[in-house]
Image 1: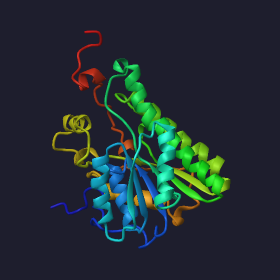
Image 2 (image 1 turned 30 degrees about the vertical axis):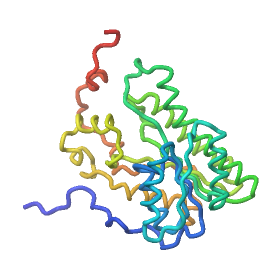
Image 3 (image 1 turned 90 degrees about the vertical axis):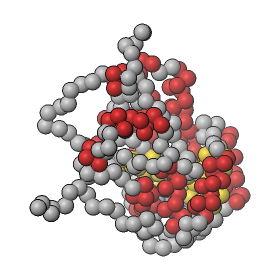
Length: 298
């Protein structure tokens, strides 16, 4: 019997903190898209370390439910929510005003909110392109700009983490809109780290791999099931998928006092999946066929 380990070990159990208790006590953490999915998982790890949370999103009921869950995390500080469309710079300013009034100027900004759906490039309408780019890139910029300007005016330090995607490097067939936007998000990390470093503002990127969660959209979930029915783990070099808390642990480190000299960097947390290559390339299947769409124009 072969008893050698297969794949990367499982992470520590839920409820485990990656940093010392109270690391974020007295600090305010603003998470966009914090009412669901990976945004909520990231927010939970900041809460576990004592942070005061502002979770921003577009759905009031979802935010209210998430506030209750996050406030119940052991060690959590205060938790509040702000309804916001990050594509609107005036609403973005309102969120920061509300955060300051309730908890204080956010010390940490997690730019997690994004939009995405699979689509052949030739089928993307102008509105579809704008819907993704305006949220993923422009919305991230509006949040980042507001955070930076307020800290520059106050003369205070701060930390930003932008959630990215590995196809910012590789390209993303089927996701031209999102891949282009995420490439811009990655470039903001590298540009602003230099511009704002002298003022005490650090900015890093965090790229998740496959982290299944209950809030995954049906089209993304369906794509995974078509690509790997019942065998998602076997398609990862780690021979397992990620646990959402692992992404949260990485975010809490990048924004923490223990990573102050890390800026302009994008950390990929995906078990080396994006670097995977085969000795023989698989057969090329046109994207339209992968998505079950007829030939263009038919």
